[in-house]
Image (cartoon, rainbow over the protein chains, first blue to last red):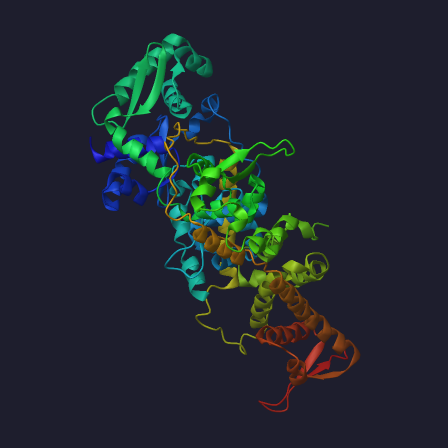
Length: 178
Length: 178
Length: 234
């Protein structure tokens, strides 16, 4: 069996977000090889009318049932209620979605307010995660796979205007200012 | 989305064998229509080098990881419940050890993130157990006797600095904040 | 009257600015920001009473606003500084883009389309194995690390709030000083300033009053003390 087939099986049984390197360790192959196969699996599954999708959130991957089929899926499992988002939560999530991974000072700067409490709140709800990056002094914040699953997107790049808002020149400028 | 796509999602999320008529009921279509789509899904999945297969046993249908990939799938699942703990897992186990018995909301509050998945993993590993206490509405979590024995301790109070860390004011302070 | 925005209707200084500009039906430019500066300041009073913990965030923007406005008033005296990073108007435009984008996110979220995972029946180990990094010592280290992380941050914000209020009071006190006395030395005013923000605020507060024609400046030579006098003709 090919590596791609093995990755397909691992994603299927794992049923949770997996880091590229974790898949690589299970197959005893390099991260690069895994990534190439994952791209192929995305092409295989993420097309209209597919009942299964491959989600990507940064370096994490998860196999899920298509978000379009939520209703019928809920006949066979406990439904997850999304719950309301307040305006500040929504705004913070949006900035983290488009600009993540992002540090707290950068986020504060963009929103013009201290986002500490809201970030804590969003982490408790499992929508945002904090990563202690080796290369950074400050922790960075990113959205979680759970959030992506509830938006019904396969990847954040599907958000409208993602490329433009993600690589906004002012964000680079703000980061330098700090 | 087509019925075939919906059946694909249903087989995926169910994680167990499903009767044709049960699928038909969920989709509100006839058994015959479901069967026709299931045959198509068999053609789609049951081919060489696929990582997922559709099993048929009489009137029951199940989506599984390919039999050829059993080794890599099982090794992966086993590695999830053995081997080194991840940092979040270790921290969760730590809080349960020093502050247990503890409810999930209390644990989430202390760690600042939702610990649901991690608790499940720690229970699978036999490190933590869930107890439905009569006096409590919510189940409480504590470490298992097996784990305590392997730590070489007679009681958790023998953990380093237990007295000080068990009821640390910073942790007690969190509870008050809510 | 539609001019009064409800205090609880905005999340922060940028949100307030955006709503003020929007209310005046202006597009986001430095001129538009200069126009709504007065209104922005009127909200600081209410904020001080009701949401003092947020005052610091608002003052950061307030200082930049007054700087912008003074630059607008005294273009010849204050050459535009270069390379100071994105301007306030640019920052607000950027903020607006994310506010707009958050509507899309809200729609996606509200549709309740959830992509579900599955639950593979768990594989259980036949016998208990102790993870190599779960000894008592590992637990202890991890607990100490956690407790340090949970160290409350309260003392710092308290100082910030006090400081924010003192800056706000500076603006009020200049107005008050001028109400009673006739003349005021700028050097004396700045002597009490504790940091750059206060100096800037003091200076800008004065510029603000000049613009309102409530005060005049007197200076005998280029580097002499600036005397602030009350305009008696008003």
